[in-house]
Length: 416
Picture 1 (cartoon, rainbow, N blue to C red):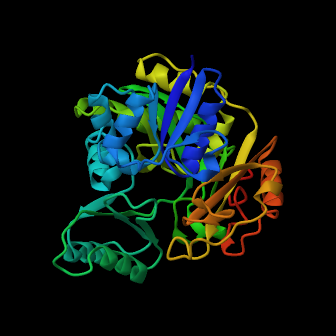
Picture 2 (tube, one colour; picture 1 turned 45 degrees about the vertical axis):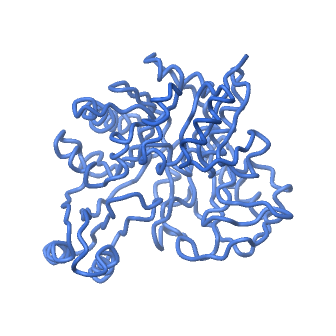
């Protein structure tokens, strides 16, 4: 009998995870909780909320699940790994304490400072007065980062002082509010994502991916959870990856062991290749979304075997399809701000590409339910061929209430 896998989550990342697990020869069945209707072809959908730990435990035990893989950050930050591990359940992800690398920007900066891990020059402030004083001394461009989990939308890259002050006022609506806020220099360079399977001090990197955070073409508009991605990234050299491993990824894993909070799970380094070397923008403690949707389709090594080997403290070797994978997000008009839900999406049956459901519901056909709705991904022997294929297939989708960027994989540095 093969492995029974439960994926926790409901978005495009979890759809990609379920698809990757399902294609493994050693997987018998994949479940996704809470999942979505769009995943039904690769997994059984389980109507249990990701934060309902008691119901998840009951389901896992009654169905003899062999491995639980947590997709999103929220249940990790609330201690799902701690709770399920105490029940003897094999679950892949960091403890609540280790998950603070993502759930608290100020904690992550403290660890980076303590262990000399390169990052932007920064300060953590706790009040409106402190923040405004710092801004007066450090004019724009500057980056404002809310401390907690913000679904990828808690960062403001302020190109002028007015935008910076407004971002600070949004965090501190009146002078009595006190909470941590990170203000840091605006780094210049090429951004990329390096994700790795981690077991204590052992770090096994995946291929590089690059996502596009800004809402609109030419990297304009507000930050989002990501509007498109591709992998591999030709402009990021092997030497840059080694520098990132030597100066960021391995040191942070060792740091967490020294801090008494060893990290197990997926560690995501949001990195910038600058003229002054690799710098850390942020850490996430789970697969990136949408990077997962271009990385996992390229993974040849069976995912269940990789995860179980990491949990068993074994060495892992990852093999990837050499082709490029590129994908584009269809988002609800208005995202990352307010948008209308429940509007129909037609033509999906005509799309000859990989479709990952990020935020859809089903009622007499698919409808938009989230800010990011669908991820359309395809392969190519070159990045440009992958691009052309995806944008050709997107035209088959009829969703006038959605928008997408037309320049994924075509911004500066992408086609080098």
